[in-house]
Amino acid sequence: MWSACALLVIANTVNIGADLGGMAKVSEMVTGIRSVYWTPIYALIIGSFLIWSSYYTIARIFKWLTLVLFSYVLAALFARPDWAGVIRSTFIPHVEWSGRYWATLVGIFGTTISPYLFFWQASQEVEEEREQGELTLKARKGATDDELRKSRNDVVTGMFFSNLIMYFIILTTAATLHAHGKTTISTAQDAAEALRPFAGNLAYWLFSLGLIGAGMLGVPVLAGSSAYAVAEGAVWRGSLADRAGRSREFYAVIAIGLVLGLALDYAGFNAVSMLFWAAVLNGVLAPPLIVIVLLLTSNPAVMGSRSNPLGLAVLGWVAVAVMTGASCAMFATWK
Image (cartoon, rainbow, N blue to C red; front, side, top):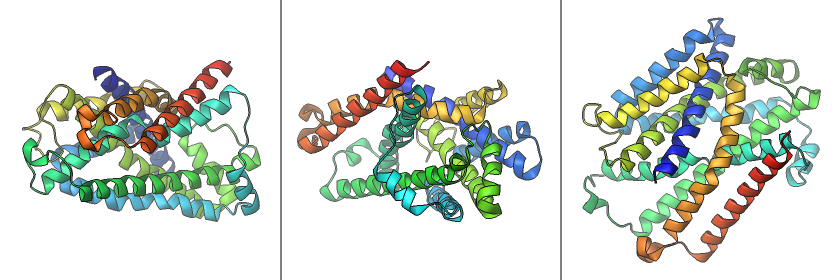
C-alpha cells in the first residue's frame, strides 16, 4: 500500500511542478511579467481554493472549467491540417525503434492512465456519497446496480473526452510545429509562439488559454489525489468537504505537494521537460498500480459478487502488458 502511495506522490509532485511552471511561462508571455512571480501566485490561488472552498463549490467549478480544454479543438481546426493525411496517420501509425519514439509513446500512455486516476476517482465517488447525506461507512457500504452504472458512465464519458482533447493537441502540434520541422520546444512560450506563424493569432491565444486552463484543472487534482492516498493509508480524516481545522494532516499533504512542486520550478528545471518526463514517469509507474487494482477487484474475498468479469480482467492485463512492454522498449533503446 505504501509503495503504491509513494509511486503516486512522486509522479504527482513532478506533475505539479511542471503544470505550475507551464502556467507561469504562458502568463509571462501574455503579460510580460516574469514567470518567477506567477508560479507562487498560481500555487497560492490553487492552495487557497482547495483549503477554503467546499467540495460542492470545487466540483461545480471543475465541471465548468473543463470547457476551457475545448480551446485545443478549435486551435486544431484553425491550424488547417491536411485532413487526408490526418485520417491516414490516425489509423496507420508510424513506428520506429528508437528511444525518443518509445519515450513519447510511454508518455502518451502516462497521460491516459495516470497513477492519480485510481485514487482521485475512488475518492470523488465517496465525496459524492457524502454530499448525498451518506456520512458514515455503514451508510456508504455496498453499491446498487444503478450506482455502478452511473459510475461507469462517468468514467467512460470522462476518458472519451480527455482522449479527444489529447488527440486534438497532438493534431495541432503535428499540423504546425512538426510539419514545419520544429521538433524541439524548450518552453511553453516557444510552443505557443511557434504556432502563430502557421496557425494565426487565434490558434495561438486558444492554445495559451488551454494550457493555463489545463494547469488550473490538473494541479488541484494532483495535490488532492496525493492527500487522499496518504490520508487513507495513514487512517487520517481527509475530505475536501472538511474545513482545514478538521483535516489538518490531509491539507498539510496538499500544501507540501504544492511547495515541493514550487521547489522544482525554482531549482531551475525546465517546465516543458518536466511535463514530458512527468508523463513518461506516469507511464512507467502506472502498470504496478494497475496490477494492484486488478488483484483487488478480481478477488471475490474482497469484492464479493462485484468482482471483475473475465472480459474486464483480460482488458486490464492487456493494458499492463502493453504499457510494460513500451517501458521496456524505451529502456532498451535509450542512448
